[in-house]
Length: 357
Picture 1 (cartoon, helix red, strand yellow):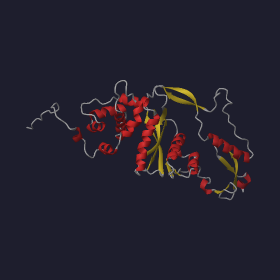
Picture 2: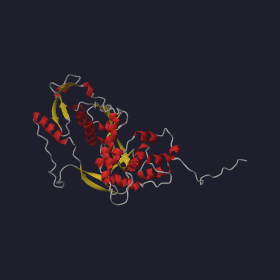
Picture 3: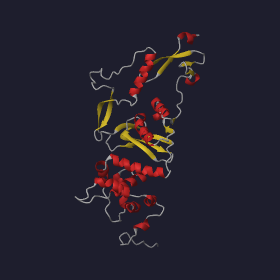
Picture 4: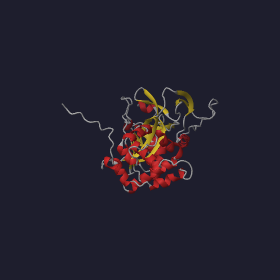
């Protein structure tokens, strides 16, 4: 008969927390290279030093958020629970086994109320500059993509609202270029009709939008084929080593191409070395390609398979003549530029006589 093991769960022991964390643990590697003095200097003005109860060490709050993102923990609430029972996490924070961990609400308040957004951005920039100075970042090729983050909002609590569609950043430039082309062709200019609708005195097109009553800042998007949920979307730029170079957070129903300008401008303002910009099909628009090329970079975009009618000439079978701004079809017919619509799409046509001959 096997001997029953003695229950040692309640035996008092003297523990060296340092000895319980493996030498090759990721948090040990971070602790060896990090210097936190600059963090204390940066965050000190947001604490009162001569009045009230002592505040939680600001570096501990930063470390708790760092643990959440390093190990893919879903929320601060879950991070708080994980730290309570994880020896390595307690060691990283500098807390003993019996010490009370700062509540997740304290961490949330610090990032939402105490520390302004500019300070969080400065922390991000400081760490990124450290990586740059050690030649760990290569901004010559960047990758842009969006990731949906589920919002903490009940998808059954919402209301429908009529909201004005946001004007595209390039709409003014597009309108000027379109009207300049239409003037050369003898066409009437396209006018802004924003103020001609008495039911919409503010101007602009309107659309029905599903707004969460729990979290109005998030947006409804369709996940998969049928599931709908409220979410945010983080549009992230990284290099080939996965260093994050810029982030823009929008509602989950904002298209990738709409949020692209803000995050692209942020990265190109900080890094002049960008040569290639890799994006998926969500960013494949004429404006994005045009702006990237004008900045001297090469847009890397996926190929779109031709889906038109098979009994007609394919677009690549026509020959373009840039000197005369005309296309020549495989049978020798000349297609001339006849008009440009408000979206900047050009129409090239031949005469019926040419097509019949």
